[in-house]
Figure 1 (cartoon, rainbow, N blue to C red):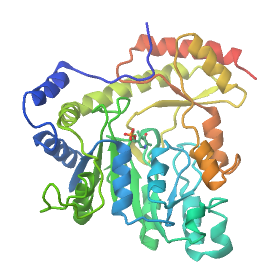
Figure 2 (figure 1 turned 90 degrees about the vertical axis):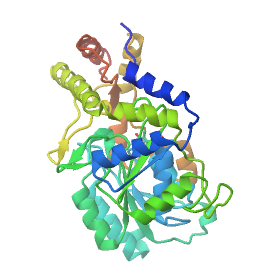
Figure 3 (figure 1 turned 45 degrees about the vertical axis):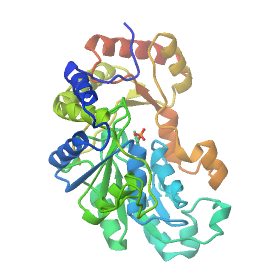
Figure 4 (figure 1 turned 135 degrees about the vertical axis):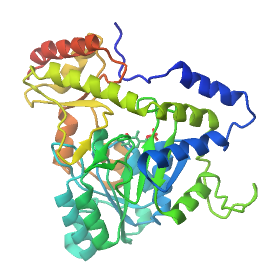
Length: 397
Ligand SMILES: *Cc1c(COP(=O)(O)O)cnc(C)c1O
């Protein structure tokens, strides 16, 4: 019984949907992407949906649409996948990290309010939140605080009541990185609709996949038109193929991918239910293991969308030794997340150091993502949990 880290759920109908596109001449910008986008509007109630070729591309277009430019400040979290910070760097803006809540791994909104207040005040109070070093090209000239970019970590939305209150008060855009949260809900509202922009991603380990792909949703019509233009080499409505109103990109989602996504989207409820069933099994079989804390779901998360299954280990367990033992027994696991501020290029660019974001670092040190997909059988979950129960004892510090 081989247990993969993750695996997509693909049916004959999915494969057929891709093959059908290959029997037409429309391989890009055809009817499938239109239908895929409409599907997202229907699912989330958003006015506009814009398909792109990755979640990262989607986040980048939101950064452009929010008017974020060189030296502008964007408040975000270091406990995430690097893409949520990289899109800020693409525009030479400056990420201001705020640490996370220990239970959810989502941005700590008390600290977020203080950060926004201090940064808008300027001077000494503001400096405490800024990276130790700013890139030389910034010449020390700080722009304005423009946006908050929260991440819905592991499929659980951040606390948007608090985030939007702060954003409104200071006139900031909110870019929701909902790449891990398709199908999740906060106080009954769908993930992705909780800020001004939301972005989903469809890499093969996500809740639905297109191979590579992403989707932006927003209610802002001007921003949607702008992002549509940017994804298509800057061609605004009315531009011919060789007219480019804006500096754009090729962030288009091809028709084969869109067809696969549409077919997957039609089965979203089933795909999410499969994942929830596996998460329930994990919760049940891990309950016996004292040194392991399962993911915590807070009351405001009215619907979890299980993206990964990340446990926290008791500090008495040597996480890396545990991971090694599990790997030797055929159970792949992964530390998740590895803090963004400690990535080599981030330390070099901004002078971040160990200790800068203690909650993020502690979660990063004690977390372990277990093999997870809707395809897992109960037998697989039992085997993983049995291996953990044994290995935890061997990995005691
Ligand atoms: C998956 C993911 C993305 C986007 O990833 P792509 O590989 O570019 O599609 C962005 N942010 C988070 C938190 C993610 O998990």
